[in-house]
Amino acid sequence: MSCLHPLAVLLPLAVFGATDESNAELRPGESRQFITIERPGLPPVQLPATDELVARDALVGTWQVTSVEYEGRPRPDLSPNLRMRFSRGRLELLQWGRCAMIVAYELDLKTYPPRFSWVLRCPGRTMLQTGVYWQDGDTLMLCVASINARGATEFLTQPDDGRTLYILQRIKPPTEKQPPPDEQWMSLGVFALAKADQPGANMIVRLAVNHQGVVSGESYDFVTKSKLPLDGIVDSKTGQVIWTVGRGEVTVMRASLDGLTETSGQVLVQYPDGRTETWTMTYMFAPSR
Image (cartoon, rainbow, N blue to C red; front, top):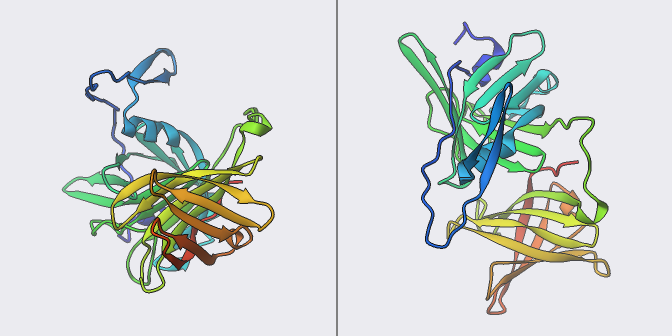
């Protein structure tokens, strides 16, 4: 690996093509949605809006690396000069003073968090890195394992594990129009929730709030392996964020609005049968600004 510069050690890249294709079949009575793909110099095309294509479409754009953590240690020397530019199926690594490097990436949405991978093919050798990613609006988090090692499955790095964690912010065009105030949503962040007697997270929640104090987002339960929407409100009298998870017999969660701005805090969990527990709530990454 000594022949690779520091960026290549963290992000091995390959120059090869990739296309987005879908053969998804419609269920009876289901309408098909499409995504329009703009092609420079060519007419635009419409493709069926599969989950993977929608996920790729959400990544399109240029992202600034704002934080790098390698083997449990921050690497502030790498962040300012790193950018990633996504198109649908292609990723360009942009580092100041070096030529852009290009890779075809893959997403696997069958797992949660979703998996992210890329490969570097050299004569007589293939180098593969796999990991997980999470996108919350204009914030993106990637955690990848070392070359040809078992893929990262969580957003965590530790000494000598060879893993790298990236946090990125989307670079918006200066002419981009903002939605009306009543349609704007502010991300509160993505949080890991853990029971007091559990070493790891039991649930991940993504929270956003609008100007009327309405809370929206989604949750993922690692125990039941289910993803559910969540809805709630900000109680201005008590200073609490209150939300429900699921449909029908819902679980109610309450956390201090001030506590959501801290690295970690507590959340009160009330089950449908009336039982309550206090869980730990920790930032996975900060909200978009």
